[in-house]
Image (cartoon, rainbow, N blue to C red):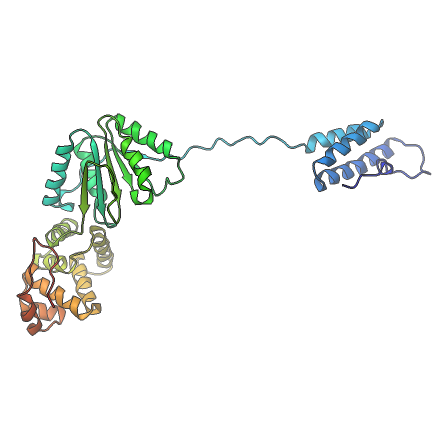
Length: 347
């Protein structure tokens, strides 16, 4: 560090007249600029040197330096009182429409809920949009307790101890805890969260993809809805629509998730709002139109499914899909429809 010469402390030539008030003020201003520059341009050791210069100066420079050192001294940083982001949301759930789940699924969920009694843990496994959250909300409403949801995808940076406290506190009061997106956490952490259940609470774990191996009371695998469920869902969201139109749409959209079907209905409604046709007819037209882009085998399977699940004649299916009636005759007899599941042709 370069030391400021003592001669520079008072910028005044040897032949200048005795100092007056104006000269003292100008010298003090010059000194202030030098000190300010030194404090900003050097390391913290410069402050010690400046303090020593002030001690050896019997004039007003010491007061100027002391004032500058005081003004430029670092202030302690006070932590801001930032609000802590909540890690869980609590809500009172409304009844889930039975048509969205289907009678068979409702019976299965009911038997699981009855077996668990007041408390326990359940793992829901299924692809995105298949209705896992619908089932979670149904079980929470059946218990007549509040639902506490913790999205593990957005709380990965939250300490595990804090998540454990949230689960323990909620279940101690009998709430239903929903651990959403469990596949984003490691199995060891999930096991700790499930074991944190207290009292009569229920922990519902939702994961996408492969089954997670946890010490858990029940596992419910959620698949895509069958044709009967798709038809019920369409009737519920579309309202009064021709039976034949609903059967055709349901047969051609089997294998899709409820979310995909609801998105298609919403697009049809937007189109219908700009035209004079109904939402059902718009969805029917869009569903049939996409057949043109399907590969031959998939289009053939869809055409055969229309015969078995929609009850259409071979002639009607041929006119709708373009698949020849000879192809329909060869393959329609080999289709086995099991409980409304997706129909497939051999060979």
